[in-house]
Image 1 (cartoon, rainbow, N blue to C red):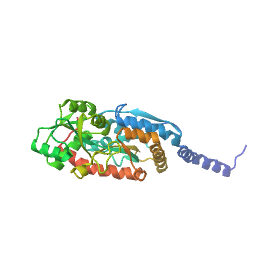
Image 2 (image 1 turned 120 degrees about the vertical axis):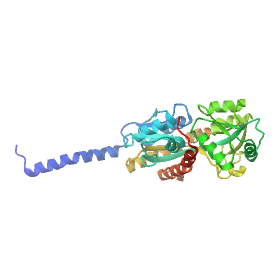
Image 3 (image 1 turned 120 degrees about the horizontal axis):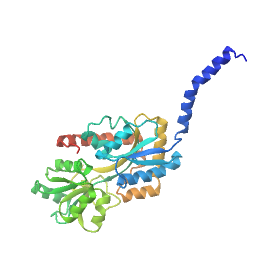
Image 4 (image 1 turned 90 degrees about the vertical axis):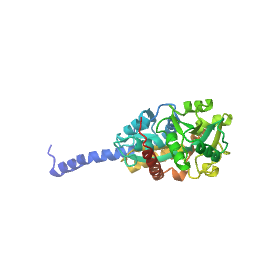
Length: 329
């Protein structure tokens, strides 16, 4: 059978168009397989809990399961490295915190940029730290606590979740803003630090609500203020630091969702849509509230809002870390 020259050219053109058509079909079908959500901390922690709830509730919008992969170690930098190097196709995302997407940038010589090498998806929620003290501390208000710390320099001890944890950095900021000096004692997490606060081995902590509130409600510790502009629903009677005499001392443990840098805008938009739908779920809201986290207002759940917030946090915390000469363990 003889094939005309025009027919040959037509077939050649069609063949050349196949890769582009295939790519278009793939893009239109996203996601066509399960996604992986990296959690850069061990299973069972606050971020892991939030990530698993989020993953389950993103599935209806995406039409695919989201599988959690815990990649813990080095203050979360192992997980962020894994995510930064992943293929930017929307099938790998990462749930992170102020530690993984702000603080580690001043602690490690990272081979990637925390802003430019990640695609922001959404700010999930944030929970301000609470200033608490052991029952024997001779101060019942934040102003009195600061006065006591000033009168007893290098005497008091603050428990933290570890070197370079957000509570450690917050303690540095507190000393800088108040002109006080106290020792910082690193633990392997806030739970053992709280046990020593209850036992009287340390004096003060800047703790998340999940760690602090059960003991506050039981009358076993003192609480001075919540480090935010507004009071929290979990403890509405607790004053803010602004109200208690330390304006501008705002520190929160916050959670966000990112993808590797360079994903397609339509993929970013779908991931954002799925996340916003998940955050609107009543069970998700309640679980975050139980963890002392308040879901950000809808207008602040956009990728642009997360990028702006992350950038502002970097500008706030990096100078403090570097001035203090903190090095990662």
